[in-house]
Amino acid sequence: MNDNELKVLTFLAEDDEMCFPFKAIKVGLDVKAVRRACRSLARKGLTECIHGLFDDDGFVAGSGYACTREGKELLNKK
Image 1 (spheres, rainbow, N blue to C red):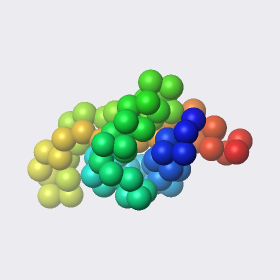
Image 2: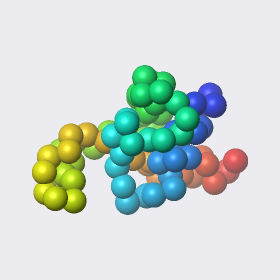
Image 3: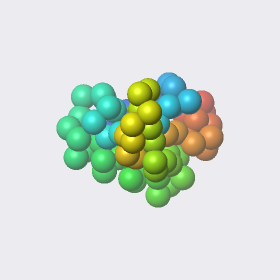
């Protein structure tokens, strides 16, 4: 796992009830780097993409990423 992936995974693991779109993952990286990290982590089974999210007002918010149980377990080992 590279540094960008570790930053993104750590951010996602902090709130295990939330899914975040790329732009909401604030870890000091541009959106393209966040996108690459999320997708790479998903291929490794450490994050998952959730489709059909809604915002607090009930409007469709698109898709977002969340940390998986395997991702949390990996972080706990470090």
